[in-house]
Image 1: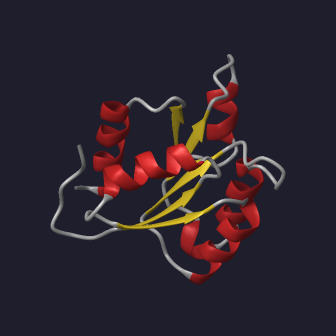
Image 2: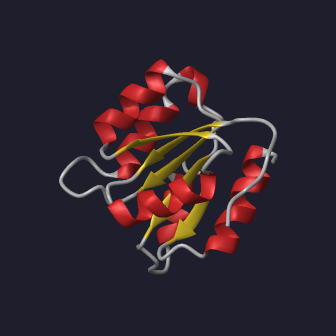
Length: 128
């Protein structure tokens, strides 16, 4: 099950969970250029060096700075002030979604990922 498009979009996946990375790679296989990094520092470096059509940001990145830290830093980069950033997280407590959206994310997706919902969101964001 994957998205289909004639255009290749640039997507940065910031995720440290191997299973989630593989799932998202399978969804985007052959559709877009998907780059994966597993910590906030690498995410910020990538965003400074390249323009992405979307960024999928895990909020809990283990021992490194969290995804909200990375999101705030990326939002300070002129070329990424309006880039869609999808918060991907297991945090589902009341108020979490609002906190992530207020912190710079444009969309919210809870884990475990609902593949159909995720695909619909990415089609909308990427225009594919």
